[in-house]
Length: 225
Image (cartoon, rainbow, N blue to C red; front, side):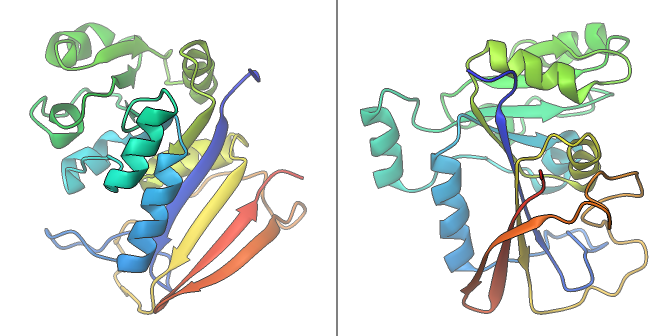
């Protein structure tokens, strides 16, 4: 096994780079064809990671949906759906969220050293809570996942998590799906937050694929040189 998992970051955005709008309902950026593609990608992963804010705002299940893909995983000696992973500095996540209550797979919560006692008390009965340093260290998270035999990790957001992984230079593959519309709200959440990224003008990413899926388009990049 390598020193850290292979990290694939997957995101859907509007044409102006928003991953959501400011409304209370979830903004659907993708379509059925792309949802199926994402399900196929998920089925090839050992773990799926989202931030705590994504759990609060979207309440995702983070499961493989296709019965055939789940059967294939089980036939290969794997759990029907990948391990679920989240990052939180506060532990402000409901233990009744679908992240914790759906699927028979393991759930991992990485938090800061200072917040660990309170997060353990709040979520310790529904997940394994792990101290990832203070401030939370993405390299410590990946090292711990490696020890847990996670070889392929899919990162699905949100913006703070995208920023953390991309700015740390630990993303091996980037999938960006563009929806055919603009959000146009100045305070809508974006793909990434301001940061220093190794994938700047001096280190252009390699475009590996362009694929049309109905009215959306997938761009697949390899950020590493």
